[in-house]
Image 1 (tube, rainbow, N blue to C red):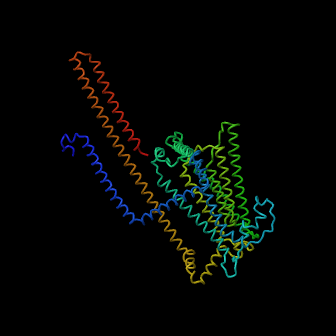
Image 2 (tube, rainbow, N blue to C red):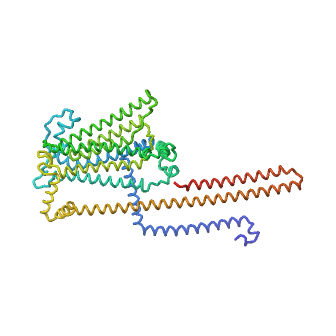
Image 3 (cartoon, rainbow, N blue to C red):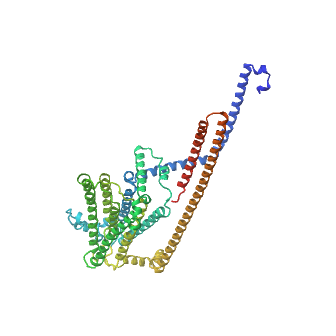
Length: 599
């Protein structure tokens, strides 16, 4: 606007100040008008969307409550900090043992809670006082005073418990057999799903192409702000990388030389050792089960179920004592001897395989003893808690990480498989024989006087047939549970589904292998093209050098200056540029080869 005015008015300072004030006033009024329109729109929208604001406020409060609840539940996760310290100091291989121990402890806590809630508490309500005296020796033998307590099968009644005459009743026979049976079904499902999930994560989709570089770049938790947690995370990552580097058979010439014999590889050695030891332990348990079911049960003693429960109690106690003695003599005294008397022995290693097999053996005894001693999981729960702290202290003070390379995730899957078979499968077989084949004691236990424990369910189903509302239970029992055809069809469906999944897995592996080969072929083609480019540029640079030399010589002859100095200066510049360019191309080619090389 000022360009259209006369020069005299434009140069006047008074006019310029007035013009600036008017211009600013116009801008302010326009801005206020825009703000008023925005305020009106937002106010109208706010009145229209008041319900939406209320819903958003509720959603925010619910999200805040959920985060607070998750934090509190995370705090209730016992041994969380201890497990992080163990993983940072000794790596994931040693950590897998303590995670497995915590997992078994959760099994026993769950078993103790349901047995105590559905079997023990109803019996305590109607139990008679114990007239036997407690001397303290019963803690070692499991007999005497404990024989007339809720610890063993023989103390439980076979009567239907009812507090009032016409009130609700509680059938101890059905409660006993259904509690134990449902617990084993839940354990079976948990083990199968956990094993399948671990197998899928570690063997089917193991992410085998993400190595240490991805751990260094992507594995850091940026939510960590505490200095101790940062150092612990650094130790954990460094320990994992060290274990993977030591476990890489391609970088170990000794393993390559011994690879002609398959069982000399570290993984095969560990698997052979674990299989041999678990077969030995399960064979011992099998011989004991044969003795209990064929000798003790047929001896017509007063209460053979209680005798078996006492034997299992003693085995669990002896196993616990030897576990503590093994930590003392095998680790503590071994460290003292290795650091003072015989220095060449050094600090002992933490034996993961033996420790895990001891846990599987102890859990197998607990599963067998649940039918004969319902509170045995509570005893094993205390035992596992003490073993955890003893092993943790012994590990921190006496042991070093194992030198053998343990693939923690894959070995955890193998531990679950050993716990499933032969441990849980064998226990279910023993319980099935006891329930279907053996005759209970005549004078003790909830199934006294019956031809078998399973007869209690048959008689209950016959009673349900008299009620119209419960006839569907009888139909399910006779047409599904006791039908061989139903289980044959179910087994066939499981086998077909397993075969289909196995074929899908093979197809995915084949596709992954083809994609890897395509990546390798592309990388080789790209490297070949880079090599051709390098050769071509080298020839061009040599031709340029020759041309520059000829040009320098001709210029030197015309100017009369010494040709050597001018020639050397041009040549040094060309060679330095050529060297830098060739170095960059070589680095690029090497990088492409290293990134896309065959795994």
